[in-house]
Image (cartoon, rainbow, N blue to C red; front, side, top):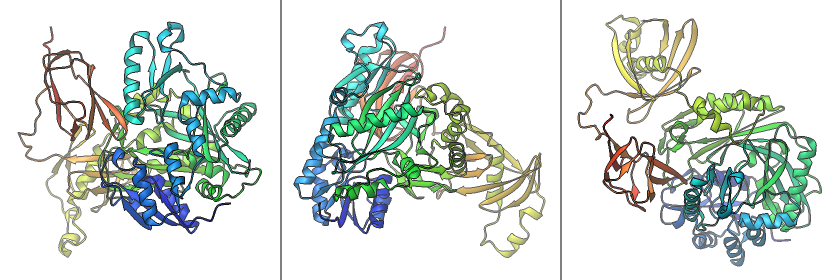
Length: 637
């Protein structure tokens, strides 16, 4: 048995580092954070007892520098390293280096990580262990009968290096794109192909193993609701599985763990076809993002168990019995209606009410930067039944106040309340079918604009007594006018202190306006950001971000027609082949690929015409709004 641990360094950032620190404190361990320069004042740094700087900003220079992380651990007096997930968590060489430095590695043996690091090698190992697999397809000899195909990077995960191919003509280009993305993300361009299962379910089994031969299968999770092959909503247990299938998944997961002499927490992922046949996908040799739903139903702390197993403790022969149902939603700073475009900037408010668990790496006032994943928080509800858990989670998200950035909050609420999700009709094609409906324009912001205007006109609490007692609410005057934009629509509000069509003003203060709308009393919470460029209005009718329209717009605030501007800060990772000024382009043609916050985004031609300017080159760092290219639209016949 190893010596008891005393100090833990977390080789990660954001919500997972904060979550691990929480358990470490409960166990009496000192905590050490590492941070890049943009993360110098991040929540995970503020949550730790000590912190060590990793100079630089990009992950490759900071959180992926295993040598710097180990040096930080030794300098801070830590005796163990927890990798969280992502970054170095599935790097066998890093695990060995940690151990060779005399530190305790909170993870599986390096040999197990290595065995499962390549999906192609892992599949060979699982085939030998009797775990069911999809047969691979050689792209060089693929025929129409093999379609559709799923191309996957052999290394890494998180949806990077994945492409669905539905016609052979696009196979070569898809292989090139998947390989290029895999090289960028994992340093390994190996890509393989297998049949793409339409309307399959993504079901996984959480395992936990000790060094004494005990392996727990901690139930199933369903992670079928995904965008870009990345999970959005997860739940435990996976609903609607026959007992025989559930048991076969447990058996296969335990067999996979035993095949590599696994130790610690891990996840075995399966694809389940519409007719109930399971196939091994991969094994994640680390803690999963969605581990809280398993913790909720089993009443366990998986991080605490990871630490105890690393200290040499033995697990009980059988795990506790699960109770109830848990659902987790990943709240991202992104715009689902704009190709899941990530958002950066100041998060002015993050307040999620209700009896839910919130794991986050941010608080109000923090900045969301360009270098890392755009997930703001994981929100988890646990209840006796699935319907109650889903309802509680949707209610908490709908009532949340999230100001400063566009998020996927409305998409999450709509997904949780969708009839298909409610009926547990789950598959990975959910957003392919329903994204357009789930991202329709938010409810009319006219009433929200009225509330914003009334709040703006209300006297401040520290105003002179005469103003507060004899203010606008008690004195009729000529109607006032305010103009706002919301989601691309302009609203002009002509408001009178007392009377409005269909609306009765009950009270109005700077931050709270109460209106009677069509006979129903509504409260509108109003907040302006620090520089008064946006107004946030939250009510049961929805959340709205309003931008006051200047009374005298700047005539120079215009852009040349056909200009392609960077939708976010990022790096140009690719320019379309042979693209140059003078090239003819067609509407919707991909011209550039921009990488930001661990995702690639295509910059498309806005119309058919001639490329008259190209300012972007591969490897270039661009700021938000930078001019990338100009397309002159061809005249219509």
